[in-house]
Length: 323
Image (cartoon, rainbow, N blue to C red; front, side, top):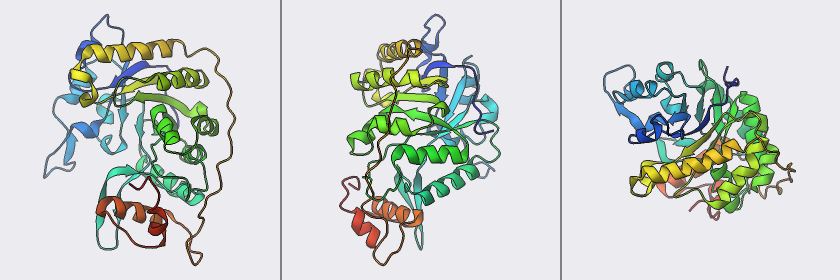
């Protein structure tokens, strides 16, 4: 059932963190739904069948808020979804470990998959395995990608579209991520969106390192009317990014998002996709194809070890996204 979302709009919300409770008080009318990133609140309990578990008291607290709950982060969803019964679970598409010949390297950051038809097949296979047995719908987030498109035969939007159709899941549209991709020299936002099955977008994230920018707000205003199945608009901000830990600052951001949510019924302009420029590298010297395994090794070793080897690494090391 990973492709079936709730048909009921949930509204405006934010990622939960200790201390936001004043925003949830009756009469505030700022938060309709909360989202939990469970990996941030897990502890390690050795000797148990599930050694990583949520810190005591968090799940009962969330259940007692009287608000719908979303779970963001597949890795931390196991074992908690039954307690809080989320409307859906969302996650990222990327890799954190790279299987070296003698050991596994932890990259320390989410790295992008290879955007080729074989990369689509690999992503779909892993997503289906990761969500097997899920009792709740699943949505895949649009990811930041700092790399250039030289090894991709599929555009960013086309790649994601093929993956979500193959895995039969929804989309979490992080507009800040795809705006950052455009600034990094990747596919323009309008082309990206035109490639997506927008009827699969259930949730949208807004966030950043400070206040919601005018650019992001204007983009959101233009995009929301196109998202007919959107159920939630979520403010994604971590406590260390809130100036002075100010509840008033958070309230102002939520008020801006409420205006966007209330105005989402207005008709938005249409979109037209443009083709992505052809890849500059479709095979390695000797005709060896670029496979997801080779791609992950090149990026994983560089990120984890600071160096690498092989023809693909030599090609990628000049990419400004590597640094």
